[in-house]
Length: 161
Image 1 (cartoon, one colour):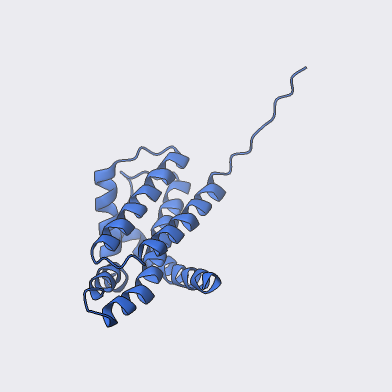
Image 2: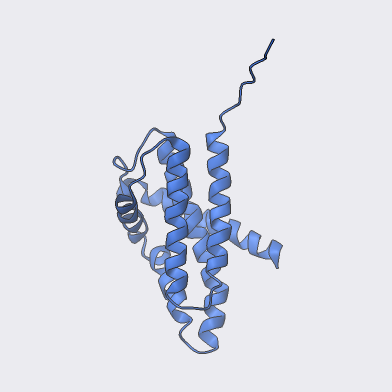
């Protein structure tokens, strides 16, 4: 007789793992010494993370909508939203700028990716979709997760140094 094996659905755990991996990749992209390219790479990583999260939760992915939602979400918190741009552009300053960018951008990129992932996990866990996402209502949670993400990213950076 064939026995059926029930596979436990661990969507939440898989989502958490995806956010951590995306954070690591974003941190690595932050090390790229080419201004603007790093910012585009980090944005691409975040969009791909959200595509994969939407797949995990069975939510229809809408790239154009997602880009607008992410911009609206991080645009509401000036220091964290523009920090990657400023850190990336600082790489244009010979020697000093590259050093500043190499130190700050990986942490900021990791924290931002972490926070975006955590916000969307919470939204998807509550049954939300990209169409029902309201960036204004989660900005405080994003800011809280960004702070937590900076700590996680800093610990990761120390562990790999």
